[in-house]
Length: 125
Image (cartoon, helix red, strand yellow):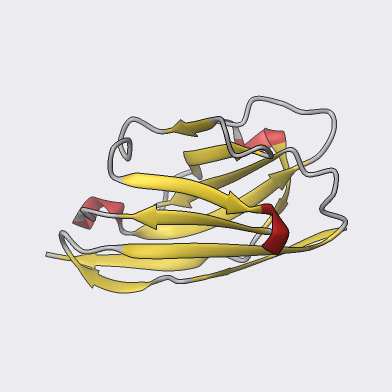
């Protein structure tokens, strides 16, 4: 079992920054990819960013590319999402996720087996 606990959400003004954290505990040694997704009201969860265990390969949705940065600290079993130049349209519930074998495409929700509780990000204009 893997437990994911998110933190760092909150209210910021447009153009501001937030850093989300996701701390993993449990059997994390087999975790290959960590991802961030977000969900808008009435919409399905959508991909934001993902990172491989080595930290050397990352993936981003076009909507956040250049503004968001995903990173991970394996020693702390934590993945981060640094969000800059935030826009009101970034307002959503953000979730971190961890995969397990067999590995799928990190951009799709069905590739992940474990999810955090979500943290709310609100960007005001």
